[in-house]
Image (cartoon, rainbow, N blue to C red; front, top):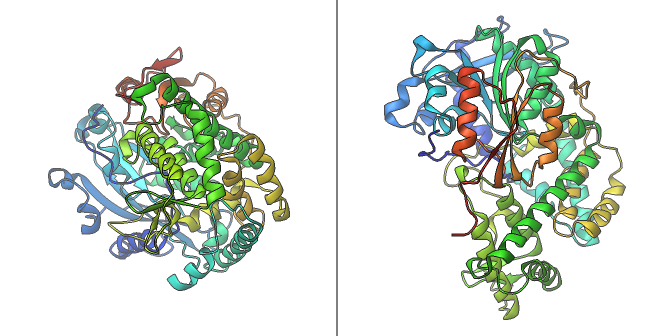
Amino acid sequence: MSTTRKSVIMPFHRNRGVGAAVAVTTVMTAGLLSATPAHAAPEIDWIPCPEEILAQVPPAEQDLFTCAYFVAPLDHADPDAGEAGTTLVRRQATEPEGSQGSLMVNLGGPGMSGVIVPIAMSGLLGEEVLAQYDLIGFDPRGMTLDCFGSPEERERVLSDLTSLPTTAEQERLTLAAFDEYGQACADSSALAPHVSTENIARDLDLMRAALGEERLNFVGMSYGSMIASVYANLYPETTGSLVLDSPVDAALRVTRPLEYDRQRAQGFEDALDELLAQCDEAGAECAFGDGDPRTRFDEVRDGLQENGSVLLEDGEAVTRASLTTKVGDTLQGSPVFGGDTPGDVLAWLQRVSEALEAPTEAPADATTDASEQPAAAGAGGFSFYNDDAFYSINCADRGYPATPRHVTRTAQKWETTMPTFGRSQAFEQYAACSQWPDSEAPAYRGPWVASVDVPPLVLVHEHDAATPVSFAERTADRFPGAGSVRVEGFGHVVLGSNSCAGAVITDYLVNGEVPGEDVSCASEAPVFG
C-alpha cells in the first residue's frame, strides 16, 4: 500500500466554521448544474472538474479526474416534492481494461465533504485497487446546509457554546445556544428537514444505479460505516464489497444514543489510560515519564480546573477544555492525516505540567489552543466540515430523549467515573439533540440483520478511542462471515497507516478474499523512539 502522499484533509476534527464548506460546494455545483436538467431521471454526466478541485491534484493525475452533479428526490417517499443535489468527484481506474467498476468512499462525519476523497484515497489505497476501481467521492446530503443568515448571526449564537461547560452559567448558555441553533437549522431551508443517514443511503443507491453498477462497493470510515450498515440493511441484494474501517456500533448509536455516548467516552478514557501506562513503562523515553504519568495527568487536569488557565512559553494559554480537546483529538488521530502523535501530546503535557508549577499570568494577547477557537472558515485553505450537517443528521438519526434538563446531571454522573472525557461527551450531542426540532426525514433504526453475498471487512486499532474495539466486534457479528483485522496501537482509521492491514484490504477488494480467521497486525507507528 502506498503511503507516500499525505491526505489533504483532516477527517475527524470539527470546528465551528461552516462557510467554507458551503462555499466549496457552491463553487463545485456552479459549473455542474447545467449538466443535469431539473426533474430528469437520475443520471450522471461527467465533466471536467473546476480548477479549485484540480489544484489539489498532482499534475500528472489531473486527467484521471472528472466531476458531476447528481440530483435525488428531496423526499424519497414523494419524488415530486423537490430535489436534493450532491456533488461527485471521480478518479478513473488507471487500468480501465481490467476495471471492477466503481468504489465509493466516505471518510466519516457526519458533515464531512467527499469532494476530495478520491484525491486522498489515491495516497492510501494500494496500486492494484487504484488500477481496477474508479474511486467516487460524494457530498452526502446536508453539506450545503447553512443555518444562519450571516457570519455575524452564526457567531452571536455559537459563541455561547462551550465544549466543556464546568460552571452553571456555562451550562445554561450552552444549552440555550443549542436550542437556538436547532431552531435556526430547522428554519434555514427546504433541505434541513430531509437530512438523515437513511436518506443518504437511499441517495447512494440511486447513484449506484446511475453509475451502472449492479452492486455497491463501498469504503466507509468511522461514521461512513454507519452509511454502509444502513445501506446493507435497506438493499442487501445490491450490496457488494464493504470495507468498514473503525466502525461505529450502528444499532447502539441510534437505539440507545446515551449508552453509545457513554461507551465512547469510556473508550477515550481507556485509550488515555493505556497511553499513560505505556509512558510509565517507557520511563525516560517518554517526555512525561518522570514519576507516575497517570497521577501527573490527573494533577494537570485538576490544576487547570482550579487555576482556569496556564500560559506556556510560546504564548499558548491552556485551559481544561483545550487540554481535553487536544488529548482527545490526538487519541482519535491518524498518522496518515497528520496532527499530533501520542508522543507529541505527552511532550506537550510535560510543558503544561512545568507551567503549572511556575505559573505566569497570561497577557491580553495570549492565544488559546486553536481547537477551542471558532475557526475562520477556510483559513489556510478549504474547510471540508459542516457542523450544521453534523448536528442535523445526528439529531435526526439518534433518538435522544427530549430532556435537556437532564444533560447537566448526566455530565456530572459521567464525570465521576470518566473524569477527563465524560463531561464533554455528555454535552457534545445530547445537549443539542435533546432539544433539536423534530425532523421529517426517515431514520433507520433496525433491524440489523442484513444477509449479504459478500461479507464485509472490518478493521480497527487496538486502542481506538473514538470507536472502541467493542464497536468493531459487534459490527462484525452482525454480518455472518465478516473478516476482521485488528491493528496494535493507537489511532482512529486504519486505512493507509499499516502495511499489513493494507495488504488485507487490497486482497479483499481486488481478489474478493475475506480472511477466514481474525488478522492481527503489529503497529508501525511506535509511540516512543
